[in-house]
Image (tube, rainbow, N blue to C red; front, side, top):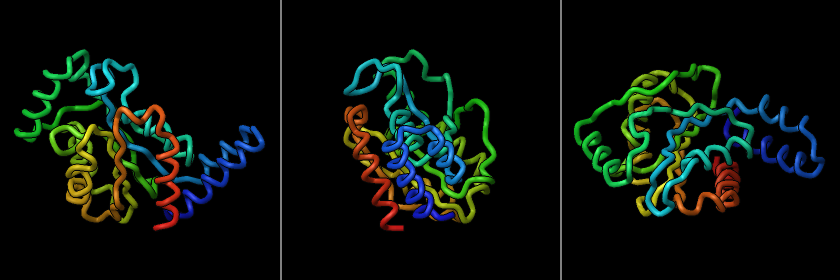
Length: 203
């Protein structure tokens, strides 16, 4: 099932669920969509939104999951836990400069998914380095799959994230990406839904 079919079915079923108030339709969405949202999100001290319990990117990932019935894999590392914003960005800058690949917890088999959303914050012009660890571990697993990048940011937009995903997965069909300001995500569900509908039209 291609991305247009997945999103068409999912959004149609979302409307049906909203109208009928039933849980049965939501189960159907999960069965129809062979779609995964892979993301890294940083809780704690964040620029513009302060100390948050749920990271900006996770909120966007949750919107996607709800709207199209996708599954999730969160890239989790405890390397940055409890860090204030300034030390965090300094560490992120050094990691990017050195090309470090921090470890993350667990992993996932990507073979059963046709479409994979990849999301994270923008740290120094691209995704956090821990995401590149995931990319390296799955460098040969996305051949022929549709990959959809998204970012949360406070002025960087997509930065180099789309290009870096294309470089990491040259055999994948990497679509145009989506970005949203971190300080907007808590009231930005409608923007995410609009983007998903545009994906349906353009693919």
